Image (cartoon, rainbow, N blue to C red; front, side):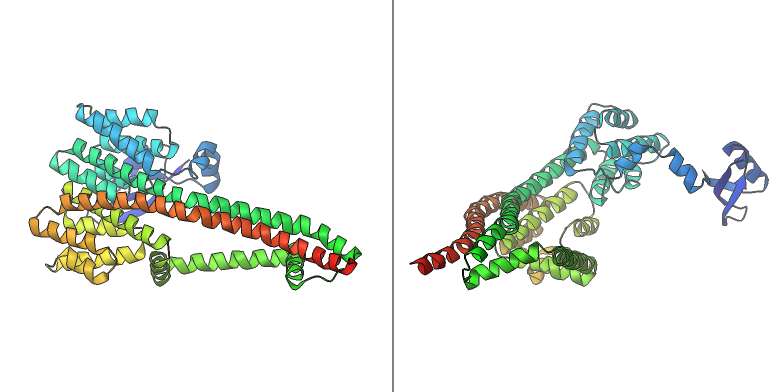
Length: 411
């Protein structure tokens, strides 16, 4: 006989949690009703082994599948078209769930459709799936429901998500080249050091050649890389260092200090600042234009900033607004955003068109990010080529220096 975990209320309105054994859920509800309890929630109490037996291998695989910004943008665009065409929410969600290629998003849409069919608001149903729909998404959907402009809000959401995805792709493209060339350079260096240098070391020993200091240094590196115990120890040190940095980043002070360091990096710091400014203005402008209250908008922007320094500046702006001040003044005190962005936001506050001004600022800095990515790529290309050539050249020099000494001895 199965056991059910029940959340109910008694005749006095007190909350009660208990377990009851019954053949069916209906029988369990009837038993509790005779005891004067009003059932609010009833779930079957299953053992971990039973849950594992019923777990599908596809569901386990879905745990490693994420919902990307592009997935949400496509869904928003299609959902807006269905809503604008007069299709009912439940039917529209069902259609999009059937054709959704992402298994995690598909499962979430099916659950949301079921909740909406039972009378739950769309935004409340989406909030049950934070791994698919964050606070930014649900708040804009809620504003669209309240204002009766859900299709317009969904179109704005899709445009916002597409802009965010494009910005992310630009930054990834800037990082792809140096990372790829750096990885190739390291592999070439390791290959030549581990496999090529020992061959020349044997030749030098047979010729009884005296090794120059630089060649001896490279030979020591080769011996180190070819000694398993040293490599294991080195790998452990690297793993511990990465673990320590990640744990430090999880602390509030650590996250703030490392994110502040990212903003001060040469070459990359300017790119991070401009992309953060564009993201802040685009998100804040979309929320304001959709009718989300300004304090709620600032909270959402703070939580989705992606940088602790930016988040702290936004939080200070929220407190400033809460006390009757201006956003631009708080941002200016924090000295995080570019001066031009702050001045344009100030003008938007004075004219009462802050959402339009935020969108213009976002457009401007997204173009700046694109130009910064191109400039960074053009700078990094020769630097990485020199880096790769330098590593290979160092090994070649280390191999040829003893040959010159041998030739002098022969003469």
